[in-house]
Structures are given as C-alpha cells and as structure tokens.
Image (cartoon, rainbow, N blue to C red):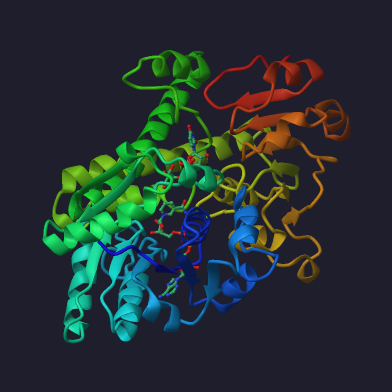
Length: 463
Ligand code: NAD
Ligand code: UDX
C-alpha cells in the first residue's frame, strides 16, 4: 500500500499538537500541518510562547517546527494536500438543548468533516482522534460520502487517543496500546494498514491493536469511565475511612496489591478533574440510547465525584470553626493535576467557589496557571476593578496571615516548602488541608499545624 506522505491535523490543542509533534519527530519523511480556526492559537504555536504547558513538548516543537511540522489557520491548502487527516477537535459536553449536560456536543466534529469535503479533490483517510460517542464515525462518513466528488472516495478510521496531560509526550512515545478501528471492507482494511505503518516506526507491533470501528470508539469511553470509576471508588472508601479511623493510603496499598486490581489510579483526592473523565463517563452512560440503568450506574461515578469535592470544601468550613468569612486562605495549586496548566473541570474550581460563597478571602497560587485564567474560572474581577476582591492570585507563594493552607494540586514543589516558616507567618491555629495527600503530615503536626487529609484521621494536637 501507498505510504502516507502528508498529514493534516485539525485542532491545535492538548491532543492535536503533542500527537503531531511526535509523528513529525518520528517520521521525518512525513509532512505534518496542524490547522486550527483560532488564529491566536496558531500564532502562539508559531511563536516561543506556546498556548499550553506540556513537559517535553517545546523541545519536540523546536526540533521539528519549520522542518516537517507546521501550524496554520489556512483550512484549505493543508487539507487539500493531505493523504491523511486527524480530527482532534474538542468534543465537550453539550451546554444546551437536547441532551444538555450529558451528551457530547458534536458541532466541532461536524465542522471538521465539512472542512474536509470542501477541499478534498483526492481520496483521504479521515481519522477520528477526538473522543466521540459510539457510531460518530457513521455521521462523519455520511457527510463525506454525500459530498464526495466523482471518483474520490474517503475512508474513516477511529484512532482514539489515550494520552494523559502532564505526561502526553511520554505517553505518545511509549503507548500501552494504539487502537485503530476500521470498516471490514478492503478499502477500510487498507486504510488501517496505512495508519499502522505510521505508528509502526516507533510503537512495537504487539501494541498496535486493530478492530472494528465501533469497538474502537467505545473502548475509549470505557477506558476513561473505568479509570474515573476507580477514583470514585477509592474516594468513596476515603469517606468511610474518615468516619471509622481506617487510613485510605493503607487500604489502597492492600487493595492494589491484588494483581487483578493493580496499584495505579487508587490515590484518594479531593475529586478528579480534567476535560475528559466527567464528559466521557456521561457520554458512556448513553442517555440517548434508552439504557437508563446503564446511564444511572455511570452517573453515580460523577455524583460521587461532586460529593467528594464539596465534602472537602465543607470540611474546611466546618474545621475553621464553621466560618471562613473574612478569613484569608492560601490555596496551593489550581490546575486539575500536576505538570499541566489546564484548569478544565479542576476540582480546585468547585472548592474555591464554595469558599468564596462563604466569604473567604483566597490567595491562589499555581506554578503554571495564569492569574487571568484563575479569575475567569472563579468569575472574579481583575484586581484594579475591586480592591477588596475575594480572590487574589499570586505568582509567588505566600501564606502570610492565612488561617489555612489548602492543597488542591499535587505539584512536587509543594512538598519541598519550608512549612516551619509558613507556620510562623500564619494566623493561629494554623490549618493544612491536604486534598492530595502529598505532604508529610507527621512533620506538619510536629511543627504545630492542625492537619486534615483525605481519607485519614490525624491527631490534631489539642481539642
Ligand atoms: P482542545 O480544546 O485543547 O483542542 C481542540 C482544538 O480544536 C482547539 O484549539 C479548537 O480551536 C480547535 N477547533 C475546534 N473546532 C475546530 C474546527 N472546526 N476547525 C479547526 N479547529 C477547530 O481539546 P483537546 O483537549 O485537545 O481534546 C480534543 C479531543 O481529544 C476531545 O475529543 C477530547 O475528549 C479528546 N482527548 C483529550 C485528551 C486530553 O488529555 N486533553 C486525551 C485524550 C483524548
Ligand atoms: C485522562 C486519562 O488518564 C487518559 O488516558 C485519557 O486519554 C484522557 O483522560 P487526564 O485527564 O489528562 O487523562 O489525567 P489523569 O491522569 O487521568 O487524571 C485525571 C484526574 O484524576 C486528575 O484530576 C487527577 O488528579 C485525578 N486522579 C488521578 C486522582 O484523583 N486519583 C488518581 O489515583 C489518579
């Protein structure tokens, strides 16, 4: 079969750019152009101030950009010349109308398909990399087929992406598996093999898994739903631990030692966040397919997560003597996990909003999230508009005068902090609420802090 020479990736986001950069670096003979409707984003990728932080990505881009990796907002030229098109647009939860709050909003996916038909005068392999509801490929296929020019026949593949933010480049370089779903026709299978031959440059053969289109689409949703379910399961256990005196870290160790369960993804937390888990769990619940029991089962994963976030926020309020009004609280970490600046669905947002509603004065610090993003997520005005704003975002971490330090993200630098000095600068009694169980709780207790963690009771010293 014919080798792939030119790839166009639609969507210059968390998936599109790392995937394209890795392909460009591993396949010097393939020309990769990432296109996006956001001119600002494309300009940022073409500059030295990239729009998102992902470890190792800037290095890859500096090696390949201008060589065989390009960024463009021309939605015609790069598509016209491509043999293969990756669709990497965002597919958020629908915020309106039918299926609001649950179903996927497929506006961007359809727009991408229509960009392709507008330009394609030669046959293309169109690859769904975005996470989509099962059978979305059928809609793409129908739009493509209805607009095909005579003699031009496109093929649709599903190739869902399993990277996690913060480790995207490593995940792409060494994936557990690459899933490629295609139609069981000759042309479908040929397209599968052409895409296989791209990944085969760096991914071991046994990790290249091919299957039918619908299995491939569904596998992605099931994988995310099951990962989210593990976190909600351990978080449910954390509530029982706090009520009984069991320690969730010990429980996770014991449970994870069972080789059928495994140790990863069993860290109790203030709740999971990120742009994928909630959206995909709800999508997997297939509310529209008339499977209410299945939908309810998966919805409970999201319900428990919501409960966990509020349980954490409420513990802060209750432990600070049932009022945080006018109290300064230092919030450390705002991204949904470490090693990313992404705040989509970050549990910190719900926790901070709850505290602001109760009248707390927050000082929020995150090493990678811009102040403007934090203000946007918390609906807070810019500082010059209101001098007594409830949220102050700081580039330098400061806990001066705070009644509590609240850890919302597990940034490694937080465990290196000089908590002796922090304690001295705080109002007393000084509290630490560790929403990620990443600090040395015994050491904090020795300093004099009152320490609260997720899923464990700690001796607070005194009443
Ligand atoms: P993103 O929001 O970071 O990027 C999507 C990009 O697509 C945006 O830059 C947007 O401007 C662009 N776009 C939207 N409509 C367009 C159009 N019609 N033409 C051109 N560009 C358009 O989203 P993301 O986080 O990269 O996620 C993309 C998809 O991948 C989603 O379906 C998501 O569920 C899935 N996914 C995400 C992750 C992750 O960790 N973020 C991991 C695996 C899968
Ligand atoms: C997830 C999937 O892991 C990835 O395979 C998929 O492609 C996209 O969605 P991502 O959302 O980037 O990736 O990060 P992930 O590491 O899965 O973490 C998601 C959330 O769960 C974060 O808020 C994280 O802090 C939280 N988490 C994770 C826990 O609370 N406990 C854990 O044990 C693991």
